[in-house]
Length: 378
Image (cartoon, rainbow, N blue to C red; front, side, top):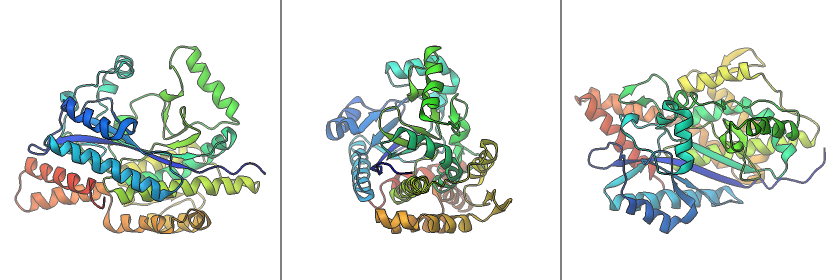
């Protein structure tokens, strides 16, 4: 199947939480001067999020992964530098260890006011942050074809990214509690499968005509065709506390998009499994991260994540060579050996408790870890 080769550009969006360096608690009303100063230095690459304690950054459209890394490092370091001037710090974690959603205040924007009115408490509980990776595909039909195939791999990406083991001071027992909160919204989770881009558009337009949504930006699937850019946007992952983890996941996702394009070009495709089956792996990644393996549906059994990762890296070898990102793919092994942010948060908490700290102090030590790791390696 011939056709124009996609650009495979890459862009990364991240959301952070703002904490007070003294109390380690969330800042429900950051100083307007802080947000203004960030906007002065970063322009449209930074914005307030639904809650005032959240701040979002987005890289430029990047031709290489190194460009994306450099841009994201600059965004993180700039936000951290400005926040520090006000006694604050950003943390790249999908939940705060002990912050309470009831104490937070929404950002004064019409879009967010409509969201809160429509979703009520389901929206007000959105004290969560994520990472989105855009890959330029430049072809609507190709985007839908990959949309249908790539969900199989999304739980693997989630497992590597987990950074939300705590919620309002409680150890949840999950590595990604963020998804529990996000799943309360409509139009979330794994995407539907579509025969064509036309079918996708007709499905979206049915909701628009009924007055339920204004446009496709109100569809919040784990992966979706972007309504603003010619990209396929991956949204399932927690925000990664360490920059290197984020770049690793972006590299894997970008290579997966190219690998599935290669198959399409050769009149082949990845086997499409039912949403029901893939949801099982999504839950396992949400619950255990990569600790307990995922289901290999071809074998019909749970397989160690390390084994699955070996297979994915082998599958993507040609694509990693094309993009020059072999090291970034291999870094996934480091994440497994060292642990995701969720693992590190839990280890920090339990070590503090074992050393005699009380519950509150131990949670604050987790925030200290997050402050440090958010700017590590920049």
